[in-house]
View 1 (spheres, rainbow, N blue to C red):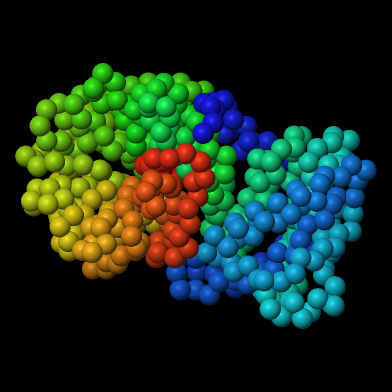
View 2 (cartoon, rainbow, N blue to C red):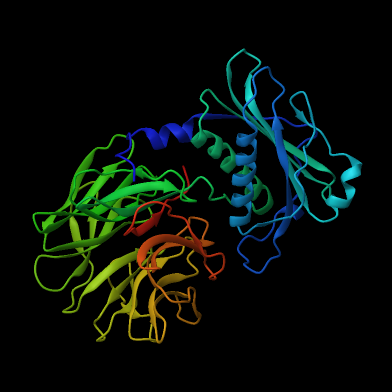
Length: 453
């Protein structure tokens, strides 16, 4: 893996691209073009990713970069679960100066196979004020909605692989938003734990596994990262002198502070939805309980008090309830309580091991690790009222540490398949299983970031 990242790197990449809109006809996706994005059974939208050509300037970039951005865009759209990328030949789209041009009628046969087509051009060129940089023009054409044609220009002063991919991600997210009214996940990040020499360090990578960057580099055990709602911080458990403490790290500066001082147990910390407090499982001695720490005052409130072990708190998105793991019934099961610790109710009854709950961003599901006879540890989901339950992952593996994508359509988790622990993503219904980690071994505890504010 790579050395510890420059603390400003994540934010520089996010802010390095300027976006300009260019149109040949007004953008006019009507309400009838917005799909019901909460329905998993809706038919995916067929899309033709036609290809990318050079920007008409004196300086050209390599054809490899055009091919790369096309590949990244296809993967983003397919992974979105909104679009189905059509298996059609790469064909160059048309432009008129800085405007998209309606596609030729000779392509009518291909249009009949898809709902929307997208194409673009890429190169090194100058803007109207003479500034030169990387230009990425993208167009979309939807003949089924009054020949809607729209385009975006992305511009960066720098040219590198990460910025090129970020441009493709932005266009993919734009298309997802135009057809669902919801934000796409292509620009989100995933934090995780990786083995580094004798320690465990925190890393952050793109949602598709690209460019893992080391965040901590102290040689200790740093485990269980979780993002703050504003995406500025990670909180995690740090092992120091055989004690556990809850740490907060600011990604932009690398500044760290101890939120919960060392004790025999301080684990599974998570932010409340408003970002004003964290919950965690802590214990000086004996069994753990769930605590809530106010970040402004530093005062801690004990939410559970039981002779059993209470672990892994997870907030409902409305901030009214907390799911957690407890063995108070003899075996680890999922429980739900009110935000103040009252009204505790058991949620799971099937199976002898259910743990590590994670509440979905829209509140309709709680995913957790379940033990299935004959299969071992898998991911399951259950509705908060307990009336619906299903198994998500299957096969010969040990699946752990589920975390939701902010759109509620996908999950990231660690899994031991083939003898080593790696990072995978899957849809909330168990489709599209994909290994996204590419380097290192013993990777664990992934945490999917919120959307960029």
